Length: 161
Image (cartoon, rainbow, N blue to C red; front, side, top):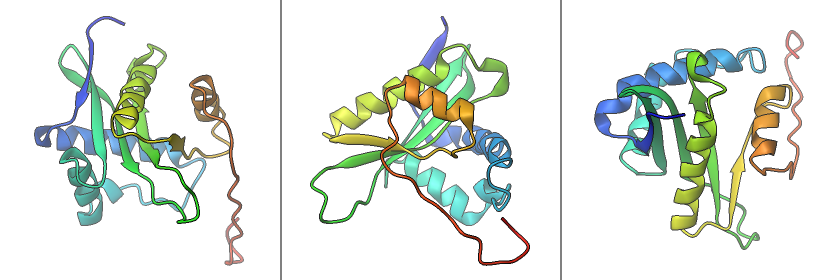
């Protein structure tokens, strides 16, 4: 799609990123009802995104269409067990707002993330996606990601799954 610009986020983009994070959180609710839907606006959430924007503990990218922010991605170098001999980067968030989906913007954000990963000499890229998020899983598989491990959870409270 023409008029799409992908760039590294700047501090003045923080408020728009927080709003997109809200959209991401709401889209994840069907897969995780325990998530705090206002987390991005808490001290911890704002610190998380500010650090990514300032390239401390990771990086943040945005997608603009006609100078309006329509998507974002955040990534970080993943802490891995010391017995593994690889440098792994993790795509922690990726969202394109609903009106702009299916226009290859997510793919462009992904390509920017992978370019960054290669620049910092990562060996692997990873992403976590909810198993029941079929569209998300399909997107990452189209981008070449494969399932490497599975995390299983057991609720220890009798009233939740």
